[in-house]
Length: 199
Image (cartoon, rainbow, N blue to C red):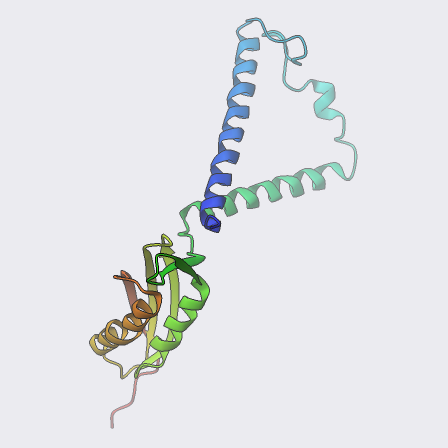
């Protein structure tokens, strides 16, 4: 079987972080060695403590060109946006792409995570008093977990909504996927509505 997409992305992320860290350590170490007047490779552009990273001519080379500053600002803006995207991605819990289903004959079938999310969301929304349900599947293929956000109608009872979710929607999902357990984190929120006038 193919490894989950999230596991592959996690490995790629670690490899890229490792390479970036190694390059930064090597570059910083070489600059430090040149600054301390230690031996550095002949091809290294800075060979002693009197060398500078950018000469005055290098700093002023493109200053008079009209395209220079807009290009610098655009490139730095893209770098900042990519860094923010990467940072946010580190804290976001990855969704599970597939779930292993025990078929009872020693083999295991694969159920698409999005399909299970859609079925759970439809079952939860079909309950009395539930206006909307959003489901996210997390965890491991053999031990999935769910995060469910229920948007309740003003008249709905939170206790009844949770009981229906646990006894119906989640129970059907566990049975369909052949799971012994399906740990769930449920968040309930009421639909915003105007207060009624009492005369």
